[in-house]
Every structure is written in C-alpha cells, then in structure tokens.
View 1 (cartoon, rainbow, N blue to C red):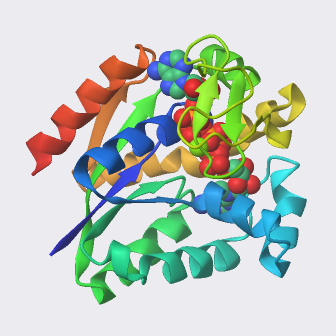
View 2: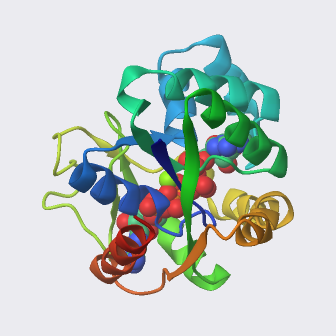
Length: 218
Ligand code: AP5
Ligand code: MG
C-alpha cells in the first residue's frame, strides 16, 4: 500500500522547508497545493487567475477547484508509491476527499506531522522569506540566508517576496488557518495519525524530529 504523509501547520511553520529536505531524502514526490497554484499563475492558466483572486487576500481557494487540481497531481506516475503533501488538505472536506481518492489509488494517509509554531514567530518568518521563482525553494534573510542575496542556492533563479507575505495578508492567512484548517488537528488525532513536532527549533532540529516521527511510523 502506498504511503502518503500530510504536513500540517500554520502559514510559515516550515512545511515547505521541511518537505523539500524530506522529499529529497526519501525520493518522494513533494506535492504543494500552494506551489501548484503559483505555477498555474505563472503560466497564466484560468485556474491560476481564479486562484489568485483568493490568494492575494489570504483566503482559501474553493474546495472543488483545489481537490480537482490535487487529484490530477496525485494521479501522476511519480506519486504512485506515495507522496509528501504540503498545504493540502486544509479543510475537513478536503481531508475526506483525500481519504477517498487515496483509497482509489490503493494508498492511505499514514502519518500527519503537525509542525506547531506560535503566531508571533510566524509573522517574523513570513516577513523575511524569499522564494525562488523557478521551483519555489525557500530562504529567510535571517534564519536561512542564500549564499548570494537574491539568488537561489539550488537552481540559480531569482528570489522574490510573495505578495501574500505582506503583514495585512499574513494576519488574514493565520485567521483563516485557525478557523478552517486547525480543526484538522483533532480530525487526524482521532484517527491516531497525528505527530506533533516543535517547529520553533532551528531548521535542522525540526528535520531530526520529523525524520524520527516518520521512521517510527514505518
Ligand atoms: P501555501 O503556499 O501553502 O502557503 P501557507 O500554508 O500559508 O504556508 P507557507 O508556504 O506560507 O509556509 P510554510 O509552512 O511552507 O513555511 P516555509 O517553509 O516557507 O498557500 C498559499 C495560498 O494558496 C493560501 O493562502 C490559499 O489561498 C492557497 N491554497 C494553498 N493550498 C490550498 C488548499 N489546500 N486549499 C485552499 N487554498 C489553498 O517557511 C517560512 C519561512 O520561515 C521561510 O523563510 C523559511 O526559511 C523560514 N523557516 C522555516 N523553518 C524555520 C525554522 N525552523 N526556524 C527559522 N526559520 C524557519
Ligand atoms: Mg509553503
């Protein structure tokens, strides 16, 4: 049975940072709904334009559109043996749909690491984040600076600041997370899949804790 790991946590918790490291270590596909929306926006697709109207306000993109996009991604060959999901599911309806689609793919969610970080830290992390244009690699001007400012260490592409990392939008994203996504903590706890990870530690320490949780669940 294929194993799917769901990274849960508020905006800025470090989901993308950790997913990048863990996916590479295990050769797993990294499926980030936010990156998929941003890729669509870059390619000027209808989906990208629609998503942008929600993303720029820090609101969630409607469930039907999001679920269809992730289903399409998970049905590709590189996800057949499992994947690391980052930013999906984000509502109870998305979690139910995910369970159903994975059953079809002969898989299941086997672990939900929940990276917990208090709100004051999130604001500082998102305010100093720099994201790579080509592949969404993330850096921080203070906590994880690139070797050359403005250039991605991994692929040499330009680094930019996400439009939704402005302080007003960050505030709304955190509110939306608390209202619509935080209920998934209890949802996965009830299914005995949740593993809480202390996301306030340095990046390498969070990775160590996360890898321990993954090995333990195996
Ligand atoms: P998405 O792109 O998923 O954004 P998010 O969930 O708000 O999460 P972030 O990417 O902001 O944070 P992260 O946890 O990945 O942190 P990162 O590793 O970058 O979604 C964007 C939008 O798309 C949503 O608002 C919504 O509109 C839409 N969307 C996406 N998915 C959707 C869905 N399923 N349904 C509906 N709509 C959806 O780290 C942050 C910063 O901190 C970086 O600078 C990093 O270098 C630094 N950092 C990381 N870890 C540490 C550490 N341990 N110590 C110090 N600094 C650290
Ligand atoms: Mg991210």
